[in-house]
Length: 186
Image 1 (spheres, helix red, strand yellow):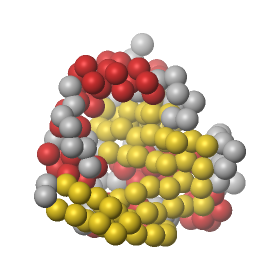
Image 2 (cartoon, rainbow, N blue to C red):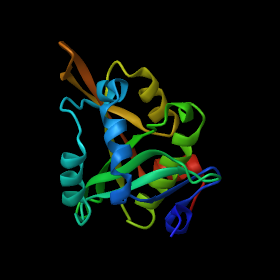
Image 3 (cartoon, helix red, strand yellow):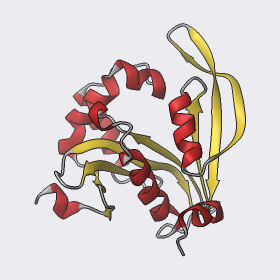
């Protein structure tokens, strides 16, 4: 089966398909990238073994759904995105997205991927609120999330420690009606 055969969420330029065991070497590479580590707070090295253990834990976890972001035209994996801590009783979840392929950053792929993911969360999963935490010095990510409709709702002062320095951790969220108004979807 080609990766395009397993596309689950399809946009104009990207598609999201379920994370597969064969994707784990890419996840290891992206997680070990110094820039990605600094922006996501990962402090331990990723190996294929510990990434396999993570995959085994999440693959059947009903509180998580994880995708590989592919460039639609080529089927090339360019990143990962997921919903975690899905709590149906409160209709909430947290979101994560990484465009790990640096040549694809800043080209609108992330915007399209997160829009597909939020539409899925608010539509198919009937969620009401999506949140995310962002390292305070990551101005590019803060601007990205605000561009797609997230609002700042709080600061965890010195809530992030990396490379001998503390930084604030900025909490953002988007509600279903805010997403719908911004994206004109039913």
